[in-house]
Image (cartoon, rainbow, N blue to C red; front, side, top):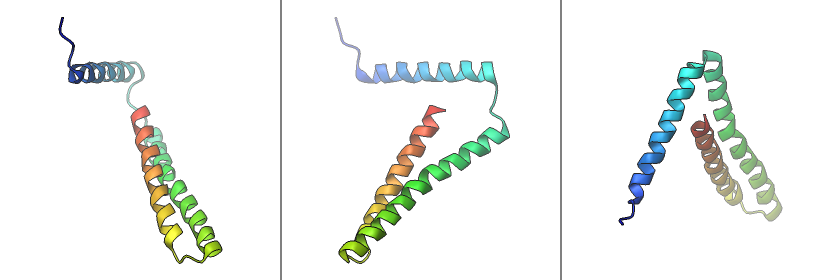
Length: 94
């Protein structure tokens, strides 16, 4: 008996996901303009809030340890990466 190559399983999973999305679209229809605008707004906040938290914590650590902008820059980057990851997950959930 031969094993199914991994890329076949990936293809099956993609086909199942597409079928589910198509069935949901046929059942519910297209999202309204208000829902699309709401999603755009929430995606923006999902990226901005972690970045702002990174800046605030970084500024506090820089003042505490007198390190210039080292912590601010590092935590801003971490916040942006986290925000983009959250937005990516949110897009793929809907």
